[in-house]
Length: 288
Image (cartoon, rainbow, N blue to C red; front, side):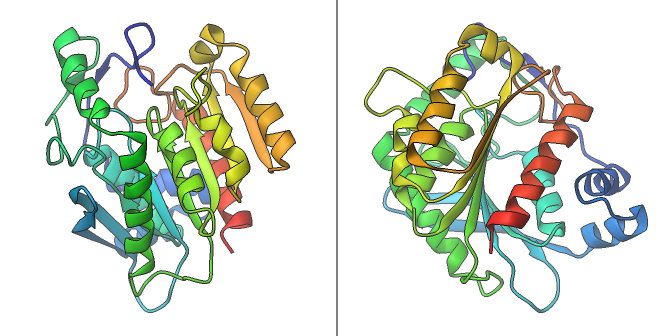
């Protein structure tokens, strides 16, 4: 995950305009700007409470307006948690035809947003607080959360329960997405990890060792500076996927850790849109 050497620095959380939201959807789905703006306007957003074995997670639910059912997606945020920019991602994805749950992974420690406004991850005290929230999440707790979140999504009348569920994560959300796929293998059909940290470790709990327990297609988008620090990790992942006979794309993007999230100092719009397009294509294939 983000650490002292590789992190996004100062992260602002600007309000994303409707015009920018339309452009986001155009880039991802290849539809007209007018249609994209209309789709965004028809997304329903709700603040929800998800009961887990360890408490209640204050989360955000998004789905297309109108009658119908759609595949579900669980979104794990990065180390800065559920905040406006993650809500914008949820809206964007819902506009493409999904029921999306963006969770507060730190509900055991703090309601969202855990740090309002700009967050300087380069500040040691800020890192200490956020890492403390992360350390309060045990692997057992994450697995139980995953089951609860997917069950919540399946309980929504808007969810197409015949379709597989997607899960995507950013930074620390990458390994959490792997864990979700292993915790609910009968439901998770696609996993997206974007500049995920700690996917390969030397511990028996390493996320990459969970791959054989899953039944999903994977998209693993690696940051170039994460790859420079641990160049063998991508090869370990590729071998693990091949050995488990899982369909997977593992690719190093020419962008730094945190590039997918607007507001980050390292945000790279072109590469972020490329990653979103790849995610959209995988969901279209796998969430049936």
